[in-house]
Image 1 (tube, rainbow, N blue to C red):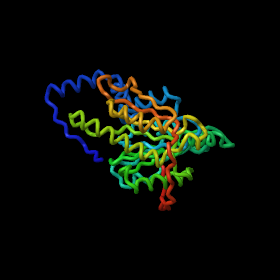
Image 2 (image 1 turned 120 degrees about the vertical axis):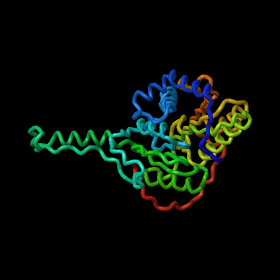
Image 3 (image 1 turned 180 degrees about the vertical axis):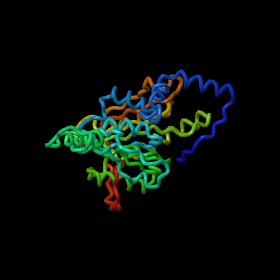
Length: 306
């Protein structure tokens, strides 16, 4: 399904209404108060859902998370923070072709014995500082962000540019997981905040939302670890956006509920009231029928974490 940038032509009245709404929006204000915190307003939706529903990202058995349609990266930032990655490194220069393959580094620790240091014959200060830097910069688990658009690097996140429906992308995802401590090539959490460009035609927009949800579910069938294999009833989480409509209710009944222990419809307070935007929170992946696993040799990858 193609996802393209939308060219929007706003009249003066529409433009003024949009600006007025933005100025009144508390979450826009919150994000603009510190632009370095989150890249998108939608990050607050994930924060709210995660804290309200079992803190599913911070469970000790969560080792791998995939964020589909990740650009510009707000949700990936939230996941990185929840898994312990801290943005202490130096951001590679914009436009640098090597940016995606360079390791972020923490600020060097000043050795004792230099002019500004205090007397520390055992170098205790150095050891503590190094350990603190290590804890701040290194989280746990593997985070993979997938989008057709290139994203600015996020510390702790592997960014893949491609279509998540393509077999080549699945091979890359599996390779990254196998190289980072997930020998089964499966993930514990799949996130999707994707939405197609609005056309103004309700039937067309509903079908677009439905097709995205179906595609994300197909991805989950191949890549999501089951609650049974995790050893936790609510293990194996899928969170995805949709737009409320009877067709999507039918999708929930026929496709989601048979495959998950728990399926909820959520509308966080950070989602605008006038929008039909809603989220399927699916926990406890239990595929209704076995998914055949293909023994496909994945190509070697040079794995580097930002």
